[in-house]
Image (tube, rainbow over the protein chains, first blue to last red):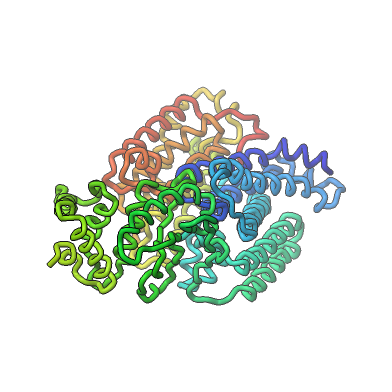
Length: 440
Length: 199
């Protein structure tokens, strides 16, 4: 048996399929590394999103392999061998299954070295996410194999691939806004992270695993089947799996984005002043700490300065939470990860943290004067505000910020500090910060 | 006429045409069921891709070696085969304009049809007609799902799903169409033994 398996691995489309999956997944991953550089979970989830390309290719590879016997005119000869059909097809099922599963995992293997030094937190849910992806490609390959045998045409592969893509992308739309249904039956749906703390709920993974295992069994039965009745029987496990999966899944019209509370927990430095980041970013702590402390030192000139710097781990759901002031005594930082897994634009962390403390969340009905906040921030930082890109007003706005900053510099230190303090207090009341800064 | 009938039968053109029309009908039904304002760009690109991969199977007969022993010049016949395929691939979506649900403006459809057929024709001498569908399929799936617009490289790499006025996409399609036509007309599909030839 294992000798036949080895022969099939060498002589069938298996190796080619694994290579195609690896190439596709690898190219997609490295085309946009910032999408998965933040954590292992992000990598596991992004590969699930790339199932949109990987799964159709697995289907096509299966269909290509499935028509081998009729392509070579051997179908009748193979049928005449006395071996029972399950034994006959096991080697090719095994070879193709191993190949596509290996191809799917190999994508992770080529992506992993890039973030191996920076990603540490590895939740069990990540393994579940990968396992569901592996089940999906094996199910696709086996279904393709069965379909290719039943419809031995050159067109079977590409047509199946298109149908698979249409299913993955179209089904959530067909599900008519029933998000639970779309997420359940389209294993790529909802797999791009909005925040680094996002995860996939165990229940969703379990439900997906149930129907995908059923689909694997259905594909096996369909490929083994020799009579019409046996082929019809392959629908049974699939129907059963789908029913169980629907029963397991909570029927939420709007599927809330699952947040991993453990990933979100703060990990802090042991020495004061305390600097904390979320567990998922724990390896960034050495990069964040000096800059956070620098910001705390700058802010120490204000009355009631923050004593600690924490990562802002707020997550946004479908509804915005009520605006409320940031916790007193804590400077909140927004940590973003660059495409190599390190702290993105580390030089900006100090002014960003200072601005956050001065402007609080900046969520006022009419907004806050961003130019005043920026000038006040850079007065505390002590450098000239760099030009902010992204305005096409011939640098007018940047000039305005520069002027505000210079007028603060020209004031005696105590007066300027009083104005910056007034800006900080005004932001809490949603007052006009330009007035605060000009001392009116 | 008799030659043409035999040729079309040896290339399994009737089956391919029936599959193409069937595929077009399915896409049309899906397009009218799913979307309100006609099918989107993705759907049009995938429809053209479906038609191209179905017709790619007709690029070779059961025995290429035997074909080549014929005392007839193949290049003009191959060129006409490709042009006829282009007419089918671009024509079927055009027919949907007669109904309420129209598949795409004509410009991008013709560009994609020509480019993808060229790509398939370019792959046929290298991989054989039985495998040539793989290159247009793999490339177009990625380009349809993740289109990149706004920079040159992105527009070239995802030319299939660009807007009608994208020059890089049009140039890429034209290059693929031209080189595919020349390669297929001069070299023909890869030779394989009858047992390995695509069915």
